[in-house]
Image 1 (cartoon, rainbow, N blue to C red):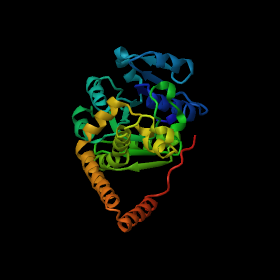
Image 2: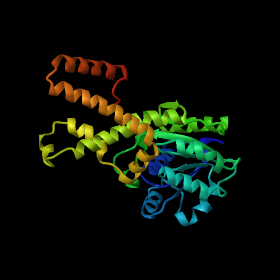
Image 3: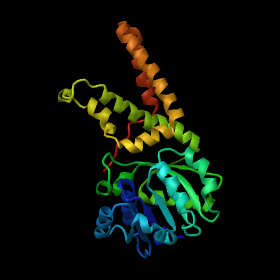
Image 4: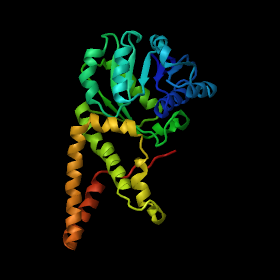
Length: 297
């Protein structure tokens, strides 16, 4: 199956689903000789109307008739919350096209590794994936194909995946603009994402909550703004992500609390030597972690 001739289905045409649709349209289906199509399903219809008017998708469906869309799709991106993705897979198990490749975008993976073998038909494939890209604002109106350029895509190959389908997925995300593909286990994904994403959202949210003066930002010079950008959070989604990964996330929070306690102690006791050593070590550790990513738009 050629990328440019495949039929792609997008379930959930929000910021991520819309970005996938726009990226596929611009980078893959614009190629010479393309016969591919994009079909999209969403609960509300305003974004569907917009996507049609912009020429991003070919045909739209609502939640009531998505069963008519799925048999037409060679590739299906399910852009829903984690448990909603599982529910969708269960409800529409018999509606997918034979040979279809299905994938998710969720920020937790263990629940899919555990559940998919019992849900999947043997003639379809579910590839567990996580695009490390996006924006703060929600909805199709804020979607953008450029979100994916020069970003990382995480794949969690499973024992039930077919090798040729994994190759197809690698080629697909590369054509979308992702420049690095990281392949790992679901357990490793959830541990590391628990630190690099979920813990950061917890810290940013806690920092905002700790402000006693709502007008304190008048004295901001960039540090507060940089640290709390991700605190403008989708509460229902991140509540689900935090709880779904609770064991790993709580472990990260507890380790962070230990480091905060060290800082508090050194500052309270005016232990300049210990504080200086800790800050110097922090700088060295951050440099070892790699350069700070610059997002190109």
